[in-house]
Image (tube, rainbow, N blue to C red; front, side):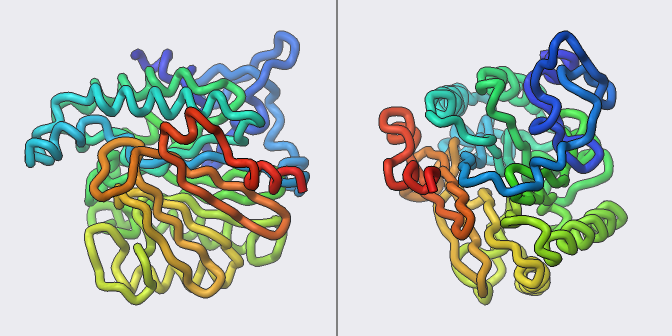
Length: 336
C-alpha cells in the first residue's frame, strides 16, 4: 500500500489532535487539505459542540494486533521469528467485521498499541504494516480509528527517528480529542518506560500533558479518559516493577497527576491478558489482545459505555461480539 493509499485508510492525528470527528464527512462537493492529505469536509476546527455532553455513547477498544507474534511465540523466537502473520490477519478481519455489525455504531475504535510485531528497522515490518492497513481499511467509514503507539511500534527505547516513522505511518504519537463532552488523551507510554534516547521528546509530552490535565482539572469536560499501551500497573499501584508495567516511581507520579485532574480511567494493552485495578478514583483497565494470547483469555475487544455518571466496560471474545453483539444491559445504559 502506497503512502497515498494509506492516507485514505483513516484520518491520522496531526497537530496533537484528531480531526475525524469534525471533518470526516462529505459536505456537498467541498474538499479541504489537512497537512499534506486531502480530506472531505470543512476547514473549520473541531466544533465546540463536541465539547458538550449530549448523552450516553460507547466506543470499542482493542490492543495488540501485533502481526507476526503468534508465529514468533510458537517457535520461541520472539526477536526474529515473526515471518508469518496469517492468523493475526484473520483475527483482525474478524474484529473489524464484528465492529462493523454493531448497532448502534460505536463512536470510535481505538487500538492501544503494538500494531505490528516487527520492531523498527527489522525484517517484515513494512509488509506487516501494509497488511494491517489493508485490513483496517474495511472499518466502517463512520467509525473513526484512533491509533496508539506501543513498544513494538517505536522500539523499547524510542528515538527521534522511530517516533517520526510512526507519525508518518499512523499519525501523532500523542494527542487529544473530544467526543460528546468527553476529553480523551492518547499518550506515548514509551516515553514513560525509557526515554533515554529522546529526552527532549519526553519533556515535550510532559508539558503538553500538564496543559491537557489542566483542562480536565477545571471540570471543563464530563469525563476525561487516557489511552496508552503500557499499563500504569496490572493489579495494584504498589506491585513490583515488571516488563508489563511502568516503574513504581513513574506510575505513582503519573497516577497522582491523573487522579488530581479527575481522570476516570486509563485503558491499555501490552499484557496480552485481561487485568487491572483501581487507585483512588482511577480505573486502570488492561485489555487482552486481538492477536497473540499469553494467558487464558480469548482474542477479543472491550466495549466501553459512557453515561453522565459512569464508565462501564466489558471484554468480549471476538466470537461473542460477532454472534451476539453488545449485551442488553449495556445497551440500556445508552438510553439513559
